[in-house]
Length: 166
Image (cartoon, rainbow, N blue to C red; front, side):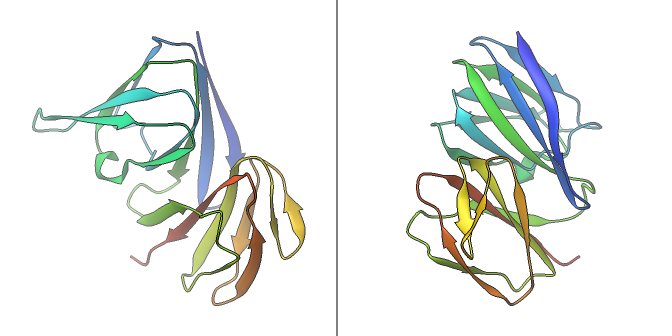
């Protein structure tokens, strides 16, 4: 059994939470696919991406708490096979043609700053603090351009995403 929920919506992106059991197989057609990053909350699986030339790329989610970069496959149909019970959280821009960067914030980082027009932090797992304010799991904080923020990551897993200029 598998469950899919659109969990968080903003003006620039939305997050989808996918949960399921070992050996679940899922499919996304390229016309409906907007995922460019996927956070492995727990579990593991393999993505098989099919491009228009008939080539197949295989991407393995190696471990829990990993942010998988799927940008090169945003125009591909995908088959997903879960090798364990899982929870994946996908980052999906509303406009496929927009370019983004994304990474997990290192637990040792105490400050963060973006020079991009739009950037945000997302609490994928557990809560974190920004300028002393606790941000709960599955919440997002938009960052102001060129402003430095104090952050306390602790045991959380936080994604840092920046929209790149056209």
